[in-house]
Amino acid sequence: MKKLGRNDPCWCGSGRKYKTCHMDFDEKIEYYAMQGHIVPDHDMIKTPEQLQGIRESSRLNIAILDEIGRQIRIGMSTEEIDRIVREMTADMGGIAAPFGYDGFPKSVCTSINEVVCHGIPCSERILQDGDIVNVDVSTIYHGYFSDSSRMFMLGDVAPETRKLVQMAKECVDVGLTQVKPWNFLGDMAQAINDHARANGYSIVREIGGHGVGLEFHEEPFVSYVAKAGTEMLMAPGMVFTIEPMVNMGAADICIDGDDGWTVYTDDGKPSAQWEITVAVTDDGYEILTY
Image (cartoon, rainbow, N blue to C red; front, top):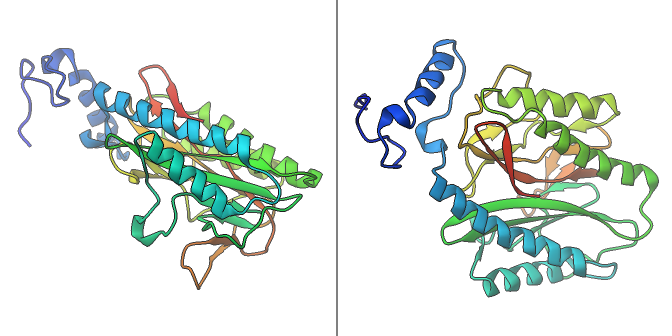
């Protein structure tokens, strides 16, 4: 790639001169790269126009989860949740990102109790008193992607399971405290993992968050078991999900051998997860979905 001159148009497409736009940014990135750190490529840095597109997609995403919150109930099938997501997304002019993604057969993931993630909705799975369920909604709107999930507790949920759901939410909030420019994704990961372990829980190792916005899953992979000072440098303009999967028991997981998607805790104990999308800003973060 040709090195830009100070007065050349900036690579970000802003139309401004490089020296007044991203020159200082690039110099800072180069400094960290010279120290041996993993740094983001330019294509991971969203422009203001792209961020606005992701915000608009996120507006639909949040509205869909709000509607699920109003309608979810004991006696509802997970297929009904899929129908609501599919129809509402289409009515608002969007596309449900999960449908057809690597062959996924439905428009939403519904993960109940010991299901960690990627639960497939079906008419036979009826929500029961005491269930906890993660509903994971991913939306495409005008070519921009958004992603979030929430936990729902149905009826008389056991106190220790309610505590697990609350802990999963706390882990997201703890992770957010470490999201700031020139911190590392590992700083966030260690804060989350330390908080979970201190309270007697474990974090799934193999599955993490991801960049999002122009594609459903982009770089970087976001671990929640990495160490502080490791993983990719966070820089303004990066957009990624925070979605640690918190297990009541051990961190080990297994995947359903029949459908190839549904991820379970290996010990059969419950798991909980909240997912948000954040953008790194010049002085911290912007929450795009919650």
